[in-house]
Image (cartoon, rainbow, N blue to C red; front, side):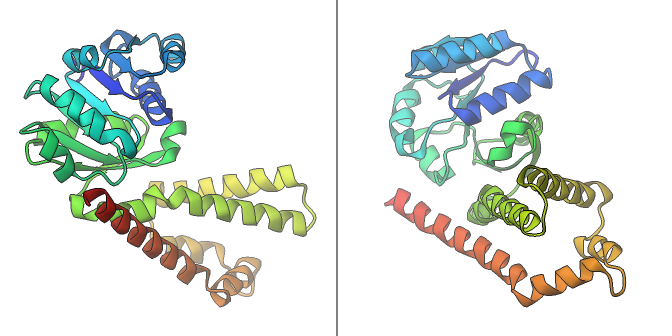
Length: 273
């Protein structure tokens, strides 16, 4: 699918690095098919040294070489990047943006009649367990979507949704690792409170969440059913779950996702203004 494609990256930060790592580990392309652009020579030297990819300080050279062009830059500088690449793009170049809050409408207003895919990944792409949600622009076809799905599946799971879901996606999976880190930290403190060492508590807490998540994904069972399987009558788990319900943990998580979704909507309005 990608064997004859050249992939360009404008910006070589953590997300670009994670994607390139996943793409190469999955043998989707060879290092010589990837060209990375950045304003930092140090970053380019790091990327060339780590992956053996081509690097350049020239946006023009990157755009001209790429069949698929990733915009892996901060939202604050995306407008300048769009202005720079607009006159250089071929109508067949597929543009993939991961700039948070930058809508397909904003991208298409600058990149006229160009196939665009907007992606909301989360930080666990850095360890190959990301959750990425794709939204297709007006000129991006099914084949474009499949190409980008394949790339993001190399660093976790990826699905296609309507763009109007992106604020909710940001509230749940985009911001979700933050909520989980709070849970792991709290469970670690709890382990220390009941007499375990901090290091052992941390490993136990993190692995327990990882294992539980894997059971949900791999068994296909409803989380409530899996919970019932560990809560024997009058046992320890149900005693703990009773406290979680008393303290409103479930409601707090729902409120957290709602608050993050609302904040994403506010930020999107600001970027339009």
